[in-house]
Image 1 (cartoon, rainbow, N blue to C red):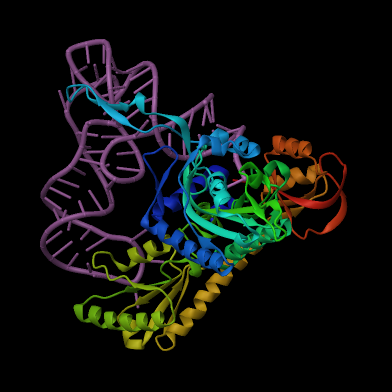
Image 2 (cartoon, rainbow, N blue to C red; image 1 turned 30 degrees about the vertical axis):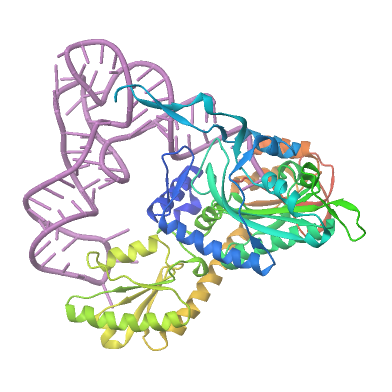
Amino acid sequence: MSKILTSRSQDYSQWYNDIVMKADLADHSAVRGCMVIKPSGYAVWEMMQQALDKMFKDTGHVNAYFPLLIPKSFLSKEAKHVAGFAQECAVVTHHRLKTVGDTPETRQVVVDETSKLEEELIIRPTSETIIWNTYRDWIKSHRDLPLLINQWANVVRWEMRTRLFLRTAEFLWQEGHTAHATKAEAIEETEKMLGVYSDFAEQFMAIPVIRGIKTESERFAGAEETYCIEALMQDGKALQAGTSHFLGQNFAKAFEVKFANSENKLEYVWATSWGVSTRLMGALIMSHSDDNGLVLPPKLAPTQVVIVPIFKTDEERAAIGEAAEKIMLELRAKNITVKFDKRDKERPGYKFAEHELRGIPVRLGIGPKDLANGSVEMARRDTLTKEVVPMDGLADRIATMLEDIQSSLYKRALERREAMSHYVNTWEEFEAALDKGGFIFAHWDGTAATEAKIKERTKATIRCIPLNNKQEEGKCILTGAPSKERVVFARAY
RNA sequence: CGGGGUGUAGCGCAGUUGGUAGCGCACUUGGUUUGGGACCAAGGGGUCGUCAGUUCGAGCCUGGCCACCCCGACCA
């Protein structure tokens, strides 16, 4: 059994960091709490971006870009919003530096105090305010609605504690910001985008998620309702993988965004916002990887197949090269991405290990024996198994295998989650389940006070109230007060 | 921000009592190798995180600062 499944939290963190480093995905930067996403990591992020972007476009959205810097007064216009983000904002106070000191030894660069800004600028922790300030000018009539815009951007949140991908001071994300004429339409949009996120998580990332809504205390600052998808990592901790917010008219009122309806009466617009971030990279790593390194689902693997040649002589090398070229043509004809690892310096064994570390789903080995037999050695990353198969019909076989890896990863993750889902009815059962890790479905009396007490005692939070939740009579595990449905508890990242 | 730990070559580390820096991997060159992380030989690479202090002399001692890791607190 993989040691990660049995390990303590500290070992799991070490394991996670090792994979990020050894698979060459990212590194710590010289800037506090920030990371450098390396080409290997960025390539995976790009795969995610492309898939998500297509899904956004397919649901009628367009991309735009808004400023990085937000005047402090904008941020403070929505009271709950600023209260939620005030603790973690990077603030720009000056716009100029100057050099002081006459000699090279004493010379230094300091802030020019004469360049102090009259109003400080906040580096966006999220863009609702700057966007709604802009939407005021864009929305005049019901004919301007709905306004369905997405932005790919970076944001900065000055977190106390950072973890590569999961919580960095700066991170990359997309944020959708939509405006609608009616409440119903905005809620529909919020739910639709949650659906896009859960489809993406399950179909592309091969990660099963629970769709639900947040309790009031976990709600986005400034939202009326926060919908989320929650995933379970291999160590039994939950990870919020995406959120979609119904913002009501909060931002429309804060920024005076009104439209003339068909009867020429002014109304405030209804809003949504939704986002996923590079945190999904963390989710991907923690969901599928094993002790040999990263495991990528084929749909997100920048390279799906790698061919490793095994040869002694130049003649063999040339013959294998020809065979590889032929295979690559066939695979590319089926839109399968393939690389031929013809590096001379590294030996095959080294390459095998390296490609496993980086998570390439399928590896082909071609050597003299294969040339003689018309065969190829085909290895799959998820199960670490390999078999010798005929060269004939290889492309079809690989296409099938890629599909199988994609669905197997999902199935494996789903089975693991089910095995780590506990239904409890008493406090004792709840505590026992917490020791095992995973999602805990339990009754809760619906009060923030109880939620807070449970969090204080156990560090477990309510991850969400599942959508379409089964209604059943029960008693709160803490207070014994009546409850009509189970909510999902877990310790979370 | 509190507690604990770390910072020495690209990476991982050693460095004794304070005496002017070393090992493994990686890198360069040559040769032998190549079906699961090769071997031999010869090389190159360091303001020891940073700033100050103590000292004839600091990688080592003292203090400040910075960054990172782990546990908390915080955190759509």
